[in-house]
Image (cartoon, rainbow, N blue to C red; front, side, top):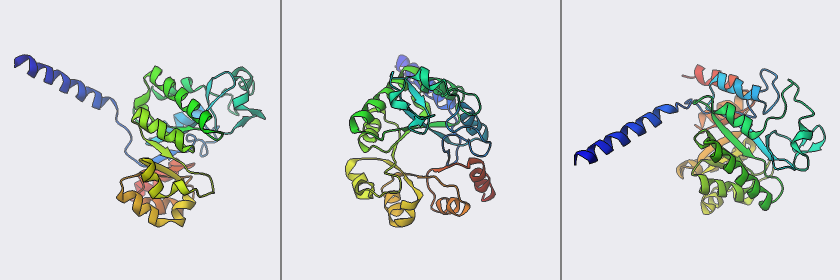
Length: 264
């Protein structure tokens, strides 16, 4: 009996230490491609990530691609200086630096920087715009890299390919948000479709929530995690704050943080 009590005490202490390791910022602000716009940093750069951390946002989003030589890189567009990322080797891509002199960071380099702190989460956007096969391959490589580096605790996920999003959700136990499609409403974005597929989080463009305020009520009733992008206008920030979204993705994280503080 004494041994059992000691074991329970050790486990409890261990859990307590683990719980204290991470103190995620308690706000709804997600910096879109890092906090880049307000300070003029390149999108998805390490500088934009560091600025997001400095601001104290809950999360900072980044976009991940795979190159022709199977390198995972953090970049938004499908091309860099005219070079298609998926068809170009990493050594070729870094011949063209970002505007602040940084090279395109590898995902490993990005994760290394992310793991230096324990307050801002990395929201990984799996850039899946080609096929289910490509999307799943990219998703598996991203997960493998995160697991190898022991970085899963820092990460949540986004994706526009519903097969990939479901795979990530079911195989990591982490939040994976479905993006739907830019400016085009898809049938599987409907709350009933999301329920049937078994997804637990969505991150739709603002226009879809404005067009379907009833979706917001349904998602909330079903306890679906709600994020919205890209919320840059003040009146839009007010709308999503009023509707108590779990997360609000913006190019102006400092402005949104100030607005939240002013409403306390």
